[in-house]
Image 1 (cartoon, rainbow, N blue to C red):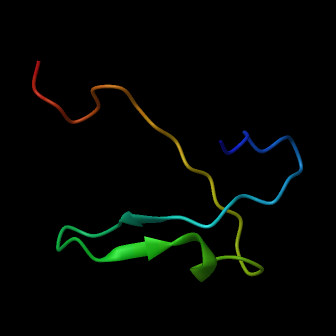
Image 2 (image 1 turned 90 degrees about the vertical axis):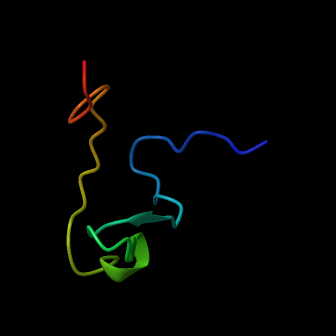
Image 3 (image 1 turned 120 degrees about the vertical axis):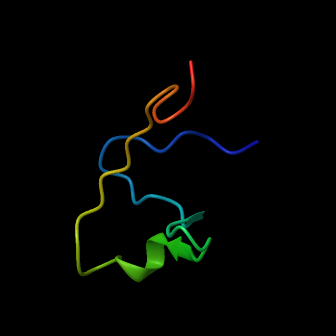
Length: 48
C-alpha cells in the first residue's frame, strides 16, 4: 500500500483530465518549471 507523501516530499506523478475535451494534464509537465497547487472542493459545480 502506498503511503502519503510528507511535507517537503516530491509529489508522485499523476494525470487528470484538464480540458473540456478531456485532454489529460500530467504533473510531469510542470515539474521543475512551475509550482502546482491542487485543490479539491466537495460538491463544487455539482447540482444540489
